[in-house]
Length: 352
Image (tube, rainbow, N blue to C red; front, side, top):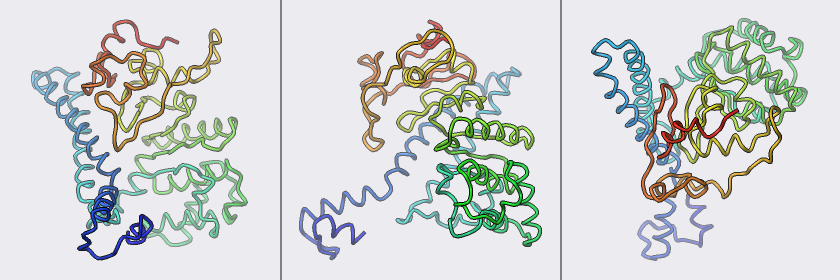
């Protein structure tokens, strides 16, 4: 922090500095310490309010014996409890270096055993000075009381599962191809049989054929192990191939969420329409791809009203002044737009 202050103009390091310029810069630095957490906290609070409203809406129907309402109530309750727990963890992240206060044991019991992740950019995710097998063994032994022999056998099983030759366990990352590195990261994520695996841009930097093969293998593993898979991706073709449900995000908000088929065939948000319109189709008539005009907004100073309105061809006065509510025109399909109900009545913005 002191080094940063010095770079910003040689500010004296005494806490009682009366220089007004120094004080102004000091205040700016303090505000920049944790901007993303503050932004996320605001989003999380809004999401919790949406879930609370949904709970209240279906609670009476569930008590009356409506089976559909009971199912929706169970789903909304689970999401509400999960969001609140996440808020509890976020609320204690107040140390200036970003660490959590006293939650390391609790989080360590969750990480990798309950929830694991395949990080974006497998090319750089592995430590270049250790063999790939040793890195997976380390991940296993960090969470389970397992000796080297048992851990090694677990790695052999994982390599067979993801399609890497077993004799490559003792190779270093630079000896792996891009596809093998991605498979190794998937093997590491599966090492402790987690219930949930998050894959961040799993096809980045891979050629089309390799990416397709890996996603086929991931789907087969997901079905065999009966785990939940969350894929974060800008690749529409990957999402269309593997996802049961899709949540489209823009400027830190979920702007549309629906079962995959519903989202592609009956789009209810203008950003989703633009996203799909920028992707070429192999079916039907050829058409010119359309880019979304403008640039994404800053998450620290988002536009008033709807965050997409500066780039939206459907925007009206209400969009610039009032935040849109989540509209749920059909079960399981919601969109963050003032006009989603109108789009739904017209059959959606995109028909394929």
